Length: 312
Image 1: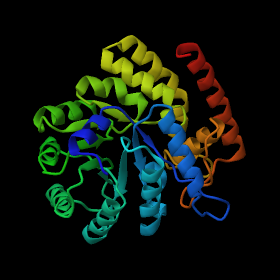
Image 2: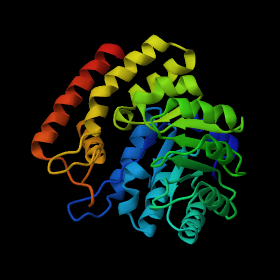
Image 3: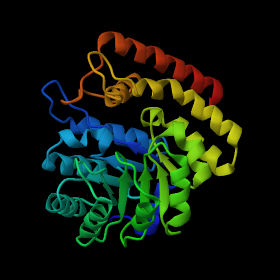
Image 4: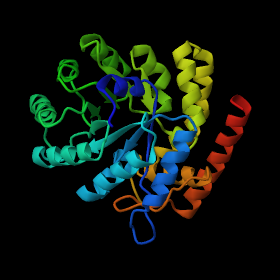
């Protein structure tokens, strides 16, 4: 049975870990390994999971694969875990996906950033309203990829089914203005992971999505507790030990000028190094080049040492 809107909001006030999609050498999904990852992360104390999401290579999955990944995640996790599943595409495609997710017991719909070349804020708000019409399941829009107005953020919080907003724009001032203008009963989530958790928390976020915490969840859980208790010095220390690997994720890799191109591959390498299941990637994402993978191992070793020094 899916969680209530209030229970989903409680889960958003925490660390949301992405469930990356493990692929084998033929680029087929390894559902057993996805299930193992979900269960291991749950046993570590994580309660909120992003399935078929951006970091899950959403755009490289077919409609049926998205549904299967979400259902596998729901089935693998305890009843009190919260599973948010990614939704995008045209209105009719998104509505169809929402109905399928509802049948699979997903707890909330994370509406993906718009992938249109040309968008209009009012049209985008209409899009969310049309999606809300076909479900009672809570919506969590993912704000990323364009520079929204504060008026847009305000209006977004007032759509009936919206219970939270995943804010992934490196503008804390706009975040604070949006929180102040928006409805009081919406939970704001830092969508830029640990590096922005401290500053975004001061502007009103109540949870954050994982970066290195996707494969070392103890860091994110400890950071959330520090922020919740107002231990700013410890929170900054935890944030800082995440920065080297997180900055590595922002790099473009070999033969490429686009920033962040190795982000998913870097997290999958982190999963592997942490004893979880990373797996292959699908195009247009590329695996890490050998020398880049070596740097990932060195940065992971540094992270491991820092965790032992600061947390353990």
